[in-house]
Length: 185
Image (cartoon, rainbow, N blue to C red; front, side, top):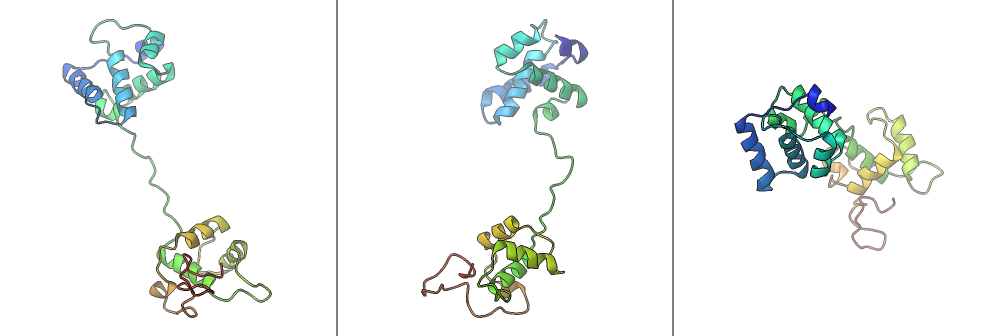
C-alpha cells in the first residue's frame, strides 16, 4: 500500500468515464487498456481501495506495474491521457548512414572487378575497400550484406554519374534473370 500513500491517484468523474470507455471499447492497444484499468483500480476518489497485492492479483499485473503507473500519473500532473499513452521518444532515431548514393556506390563497387588476386568480392573484402574509400562511411560487413541483399536501387547508373560494366545485374551466367544486382556475389 506504499505507492497509494506516496502517490495517490485521484480521478475526476470525467476522467473515470473516459477510462471506462477506453477499457470497454476494445479499440486500443492492450498496454493502454492495462494502464487504464490500473488507474481505475488505484482511484481513491471512489472510496477505499484494497491492498496493492489484491489489486495486482485482480488485474493480473505485477506490483511494479501498479507502482510505475501511479508514478507516471503524478509525473504527468494527473493527466490520464499522458499516463496511459505511449511515451514519446526523448531522442530522435539515429539516421542510417546508408543513403541512396552510398548504396549506389556499394553496388557499383560490388559489380566492379575484384582486386588483383581475388576471383570475386566477399563481404569482408568489400568492408576493407569501403574503409579505404573516402566518400563512403565505414560500414561493417553485415550492413553491406543487407544493402546488397535489399537492392532497393534499381541500378547504380541511376544514382552515379559513371556507369558500371555491362548489365551484370540483369542476367546471370546461364542467361536467366537473377535476383541479385551482380551475379558474381
